[in-house]
Image (tube, rainbow, N blue to C red; front, side, top):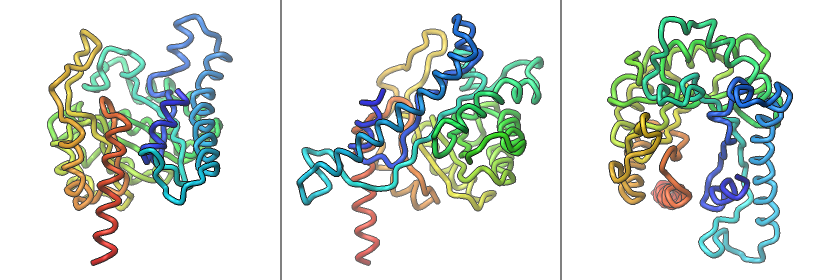
Length: 288
C-alpha cells in the first residue's frame, strides 16, 4: 500500500487516502479480530500513508535534478495531506448498497451513529490531517456523520463527498442540495462534493452544489464504469479512458471545483494527466 501511495504522489497527487474505506471495527471483529487489533489496523492504514509521504519527501530532497520532473515522476516538495477514508454503512455490508443507500427500516439515524462513532474517534487520533467521508449515499447517513462531528469527539475536520447515478440526486434518490446543506451547516466539514460518479454527471452536479455551499467543492469521479454488486466486480469497457476523463477538467474547474482527483478505476496515469492539464491551465491564466 505504501508503494501505491508513492505512485500517486509521484504522479502529482497532493492528497492521498488511507486504505480504510471499507475497513470497520465490526467487520474485523466478524473475522475474529479483537477490538484492540481492529483499532490497530485502522490506525495502521493511516500510518502507511504517512510513511509514504515521508518517503516521498526524502526522494524529493535526494534528487539532484533542477527540474521537478525526473523520469516522468513529479518530485516536488509541497504540502501533502493524508486523508483517513471513511465509507458508508453500505461499504461494510459489501453488497454494493453504497451505490443505492437503501439499508431498510431497521437502520436508523442512531444505528448509523453507533456504527460509525468509534471508527471516527480512532481515525481522528491516527495522525491523519483530515477525514474523507466518501461515497455518502443518502441524507440520513450525511446527517449521522454531521452529528458525530458535532459531538466533538473527532479531533480533526473532514470533507463530505456524495455519489450519484443519475446526475440529479444522490444514489438513494435524496436531493443533492439537501445533502450538501447538511455539510454546509456543519462547521467541522471544510469541503463538500462528489466522488465515485460517472464523469459525464460531474459538471451538472457541481453547478447544483455551488448553489447551496460556500465551502470548497471537490470532485473525484470514477472511470464511468458500472459496478456489478452480484459479481463484486466492475464492468469493463463501460467507462472512459484517461484522455476522455481529462477532457472534462476545464468544465469541472469552471463549474466551481477546487479539489480534483479520481476514484474507482482511475490510476496514477489519470492523476498524472490531470496534473499536466492543471499546470497548463494555471500557466494560461497567469499569462493572461
